[in-house]
Amino acid sequence: MADKLILDFSVFPTIETDRLLLRAITQEDAAALFELRTNKDVLMFLDRDPMKSIEETSEFIQTILAAQARNESIAWTITLKDDPAMLIGNISLWRIIPQHFRAEVGYMLHPNHWHKGIMKEALLAVIHYAFHQTELHSLEANINPENIASGSLLKSCGFVQEAYFRENYFYNGVFGDSIIFSLINTVSRV
Image (tube, rainbow, N blue to C red; front, side):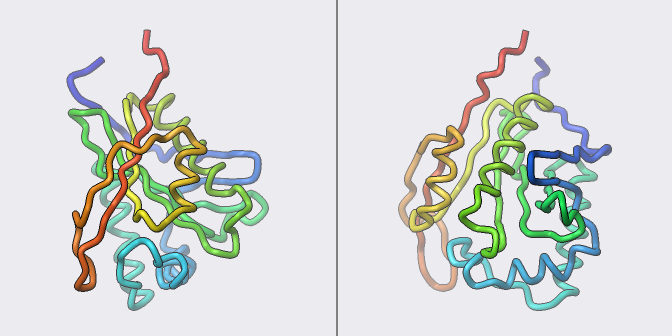
């Protein structure tokens, strides 16, 4: 094993599951991503301001693509196989710490697709990619403690709660708590 993680996202790793196609984001996804990132139900526990315009969303897509080009993060657009052009969510590996072989997973899904097992299917596929196609040793997820559904999702995929931080971030005039979950790669590297 190298002294630090070396990633190469120059060839984007499209992932297929039974129902989903996880593909690269494009500027054609801007309208659907704008809808997702302005949906009050989606943003309820993310503590982020809604995007203000399609132009801002397009700039955000450029930021995602630039970070991928620098091998700093990777983001998949979640689509249904029978409608691969329509973004219904996204999932990413970001805040990658190469010297510790660790990355944070982040995700969001349009409410029309909640409670159907879609995010679990996507998360399991990304975990498999992270632990079988890269040398990542651990994944973490940082969630709002009030986001019970996200905590349940992470636990169902093998994550364990590592920490509960009180008032560790500031958003919209309020100090908030967060829970850190992690998953360790148990894949043998012989």
